[in-house]
Amino acid sequence: MDEKSNRFRMIAKTIAGLEEVLAKELTDLGASGVKLVKRGVEFFGDKRLLYRANYLSRTALRILKPIAIFTAENEQQLYYEIGKINWSEFLDVDGTFSVDGVTTYSNITHSKFLALKTKDAIVDQFRNKFGRRPNVELENADLVVNVRIFRNECTVSIDSSGESLHKRGYRKATGPAPISEVLAAGMVLLTGWDKNSNFIDPMCGSGTIPIEAGLIARNIPAGYFRNDYCFMHWSDFDKELWESVVSDAKDAIVDFKGAIVGSDRSGRILTITKENVESAGLQNVITLRTSFFADLQPPEGEGILVMNPPYNERMKTEDIVDLYKSIGDTLKRRFAGYHAWIISANIEALKFVGLHPTRNIALNNGQLECKYSRFEIYEGSKKQMYAENNVEPEVIEEPIKKTGKRKRIVK
Image (cartoon, rainbow, N blue to C red; front, side):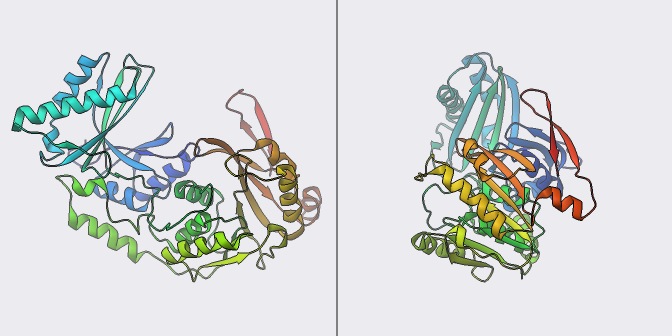
């Protein structure tokens, strides 16, 4: 930690594919030294930024504060180094804690054993100091210790978030195969939506994507509906600073007069959606419609369409090819002027949309590796559009990570 500025290192974890979105969020919040890592972002900030990142970031799953880094080539070295940390600085003897361990390419090969040895070292330190020890609590612990070993280098962090930040608190019920709130928010932000034009999710299920769009449009904090974070149980918790962060964020909430539409063919599912929308306080922002996609009439004007159709994985459909063909046909027939974004783990089925994607982004939906594709919908062909506007197509060369080759993307 830089004592002069009270800035310290933090790590924000996220879903694979959202690292750059999260980095921008944190930079906008005032983070410095921002660096992308696998499924996360390293950054520096003060206690206020730690509170703001938990409360305001839409694409962070948790915010970790590293407290020690050391070499651990065996269990004895791990136990010794963990024991050197002054744990009473972070946890009261009457408190509770849990340990989350992950090990990769290291001599200590089992994550559960890593967590167990860490727990033993913490407990033994308290017992030696106070004659008694804090209890282990797997859920809602006062202190969550995060231990990661990679190639025998161990990073010990304390988790400032506790329960994953994707658990916003507004979702009262879900339908089949619900999408994560963090993924939904990341998908909305990746579209570059201006928060003025139309926004449509024609297969909205329980409503997570349009709800996250509504929260973004109104600048409602991601943590608006949460009441508890792990940092509130730390000995250095600054209640006045936290209340200032919350007050400033609430003052920044704005009205939204645009159109956000969530539609689904299932009236039963939309009953759940309506409950979630009302729980999020967005009943005057989001319009819900019961409709098949092929029959959906979009509001006038241009806009963004985001869709999470069945992949033929967790959700089944009788003919996945016909479904994706009909999606493409409906887009061409009804959604001229829209940028349509489709996420799917069924890469073969995506080809049957019959439109050329202008951007493809790799994202994970749970354990499923997905492609998030953008399709620009025009009256007539794209070639005709360029000719009518007397412009040449913009071609961007992007490296393909796996092969090192380059691909041409026409915009």
